[in-house]
Image (tube, rainbow, N blue to C red):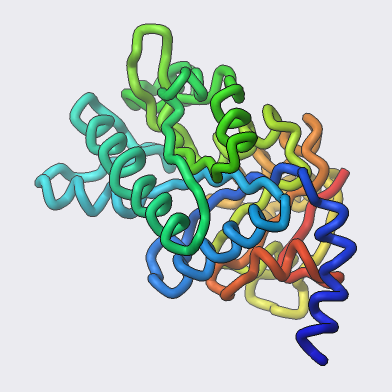
Length: 283
């Protein structure tokens, strides 16, 4: 009976989101823990079979640093940005577009789905431009999104595939750029007119006080999110993610969710239950 009640609760959401696009940032512990990996892949396969179209964008900073160290190349950061010279961008592309992307594609297929992995270089899906910190600090082949060309992603969706995208962009000369995966995810969600944008992280969502579980915020508007940034409650590494969420909502994405990927099937709980499990951001 409990299982039946769960299905009945999910029914209106299944109907509501059928044929809609949900863009998911795959990151945090879910990329490392084998059990969580498989749980995530089952979730996206189920979404696809229910007529919902998941699109996945992944990061991979930790694995990039691990390979650099194995190759006796020390990772260097300036203001949180990886300094990316010619050798490093080759390593970035190898890890993101090769190892991580293809492993995720394989796991989706293994769990009963159809998936194709691409990078932003394929069909110039992510057109990039060089990023210069504070208009003067050169950090190499680090880029920002100039334009998303969504036609390849849309074709894959229409052909029944789950697109898996690595955040490697390209410029007119064919140079590769390492781009922040949160920014890429938001830009792709906007370009696809996504119903939802979901960030999988290692925290339950947004808190007024991260040390007090009772201050958890299940829902807030972009204005309230701005206020949390301005007041310093949201700080450090969370600020760029918050800004990308705000921009996505301002440019047409209906809802953005911050969800704890360390909880099995958190994706389904957030989408198909009344209470959800993370923090949702709305207009």
